[in-house]
Image (cartoon, rainbow over all chains, first blue to last red):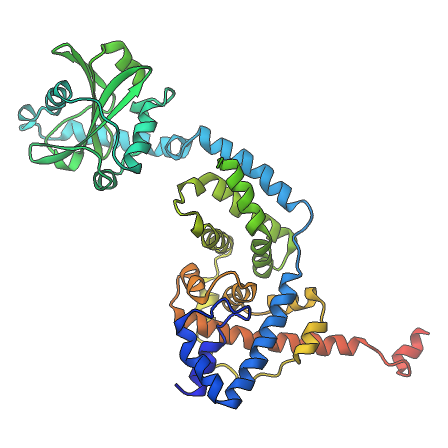
Length: 246
Length: 184
């Protein structure tokens, strides 16, 4: 390393010594110990940098800025708690547009294989034999909390990142050789089982954009879809609690 | 710890350095205050998604810089500046004791005269809050580019400080100068 290279590296060395442990500077620093000219330059450079840093540190924010930030932060935080991103008007409008396009595509979609695929029936069978369980992983817990929140209407949209949930350890079952996620949740004292499949995995399956309710084998089932996912929610406690979720 | 407490702690720890960085970018105290507030409001809205609290500082600086860029689209200017020739070797600079004796506001003014593309990494460097690696991450440029921008930025700062210093000296009118006699 020549002195030009050493200078190029050392001018990024903070004068407060915060970079002392950074090996990038080791060789160049070592060179300052054996080369007096480089050493003198480095001392001058550090003194100059230190003087500028000290001057910059004397600049104080205007009075009242801290209080304004704290007050504004409280308002912003409270507003964002009330209305999550998927509940924002812009997103809802976009979702509505997607829904219209999706409805049109569904109307034109070939349905020859539909009769062979009964996701709702599969979900019902699984729910009838499965026990309620907690979500696995932080992402699943977040979705579970959202499903359980009394004010949330599930048919208005669910924030699902299928792959993230799967990787986070969300219970995954196989249906027609495709993965289907299952999240149990409790609302108002009743347990529900929510099944989520990717639309792309079931191209032949038609699904309504608004929830369709059916009763089978003593259980109630709601099924619907959004642009990317199919949803089935199974309730073993009757139709009314299920209707209140949607 | 409550979300409100975390927010308060975050503001107390970072609002001053963020304001200084914003001031160097916007060249205006009022705009700098607005930009600092805006950054914290974005955190209040989205920051709960940040899983590692230790990364909050980098996140805040990055967000402030992006918000600044969003308000000022100057991509062509940046490209043109990157095409400049090699850095002038050892540009004239005021001595360290002269800088030490200068008013802090004057030093910040000199910093604000540095071209924007160099000013952001240079200010971050002088604030000593972030390492050159963190600055590179924040600006989304390679480490070598940060080093290069620091080098050019320092050269421009030295030149600006020298101008400020000579300007300040020119304002000191000798008592026996004709202009001074007119005033008396």
